[in-house]
Amino acid sequence: MLDALTHTLRRRPERPAVLGSTRTGAVRVKATCGELADLADCYAAAMLGRGVAPGGTVGVAVRPGPRALAVMLAVHRLGARAAVLDPGAGPDVLRARLTLARPDLVVADAAAQAAAGWARPLAGPLRLALPDLTELGPVATVGPRLPGCAPALDGGARSVRLPRCVDEDRDAVIVFTSGTTARPRAVVHTRSSLAAGMATVAELVHPQAGRPVLGGTFFVLVPSLASGAPVAMPARCLPVLSRQLHRLAPQATYLTPPRLRELLADGGRFTGRVWTGSAPASTELLTRIKRAGADEAWGVYALTELFPTAAIEQADKAAFTGDGDLVGAPLAGVTAKTDTSGELLLSGPAARHRYLGDDPDPWVATGDRARLDEGRIVLEGRRKDMVLRRAENIYPGLYEPALHVPGVELALLVGVPTDDGDERLVAVIQPGPGVDRTAVRAALAGPLQRMGAARPDAVLLAKIPLSGRSQKPNRAATVRLAQ
Image (cartoon, rainbow, N blue to C red):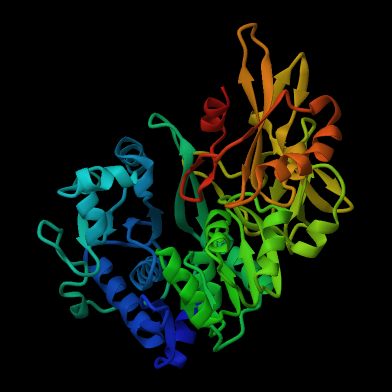
């Protein structure tokens, strides 16, 4: 699909490709199709001139937008692989990760280099921290340079002749997910697995040419642009994002659950189909999205190792009355099964090839307990989140969906250690803004009663801490809150 994207961009170079927004929400063009294609060619020539060859590695620390996409297209064209840097991971972890990946070149925008240098004290409160990038390899700047930045990537690039696109299967991208500084864990996708994942997204979403899509991830940008649909980068400021949605009226929107909850609290309205993932999407959240104007509201179950895996629309999720979290049937090409411990295993063309440093494995161990209900995946919680109370194993994910009654934004069941070595089970409930807490407690009475032996020892109404790029509920911090 990345190769097809290049041809699509060249076919109609005058058409808008990547859109932004003014403070009033008005649409502005950040890059046309032709400009994006030219930028990708320029970066490819510059990387080639700096010695990046097929099989090489390029570290990427560039904010989402046209330049980041152009860098990825350039790396793909040269047959190299991109190692994506997360500024929120911390300098020690990043240093260990990039040491494992051994980049031939690190490309970074001025903001990333500032966070690694003179602006480090300012970036700290935002939980952004990068090591000195020059420790990781040669550094080049994309976009405008600030004092102290490395030389521009595209300096003298036009004097280098571009080779034909590499078309053989090989490593395409490295995404670091977890692990420690001693043993970082990195997902390696090949060109074929990356293409399969993007083809699945295109088949699922069916972007229509000429109509805008709102979303900032690579898996939104590429399938949409390849289909001829311009993509709008979501505004960071919440009021501006609300105005942007109103003025743009996108055919499809992809935002994380925390961002959608913020929009709903701000009175945001939607059009077309809304997609959300990266963190749990409850029936209550999907229902609120449809009430706010969306034609359809979809929850997507996906992993870095296999994106996307399953999807479900609000009406189907709301009709499910069983225990656990129904996330839908496996998408085309995805095979799902459970092992003897109940852990969900996945395989398919879009599955990661391997973890960096490990042998290839066709099956992805998700870490989720699950069951298959008439071919549909029902999650029952993370294996590691099990609570042991009075010698009974309790899997929170089996019961948490039932606690998302009207007025509840988030709900977690956590085990709080006691002095005798046992655990207390506490339900931590986050009501929506302005919701009557007495009404929430009354609405929870029925679901709590039906939990039987898993009924919690206490119910705490509080704001649930979030963490990570996807702003998922932080269970460890919630346990501390509930103590």
